[in-house]
Image (cartoon, rainbow, N blue to C red):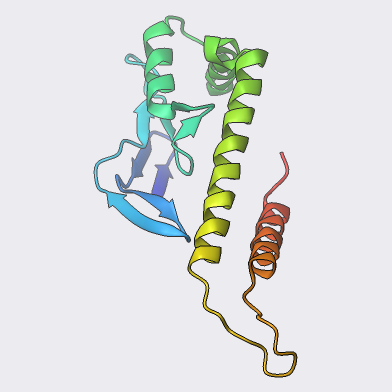
Length: 165
């Protein structure tokens, strides 16, 4: 879990984050790494920063890389903070990897990764099942079809819980 804090008054702003990242999920062992950057200056000359949390990548590229590339490209003084936000968003929109063709490929790649993950989960569950038999019907309640249906229903329910953007 990321901790971020901003303290502001009329004269100053202080920003801070932790530096720990956890990689993994409920099905795989989690690993924790103690030295990740989550706070970046948007400009070398100006006191404007960005804090990141959650997914460390955008369209397959780390936020750190994107922000540092923006730092190198950024060479204009803007009037308001919202102008910097807009300029950064325009930078992201024009980034070569974010063309419609590359976005489609990224969606396809993510779909294929998710497909492999679900398939591996089903194969592991079927291979590691026990032969439990229902006493009333004398039928196996851990047959491959039942296990696969259960996993697919769990995945469908998880997808339904995801926010729609």
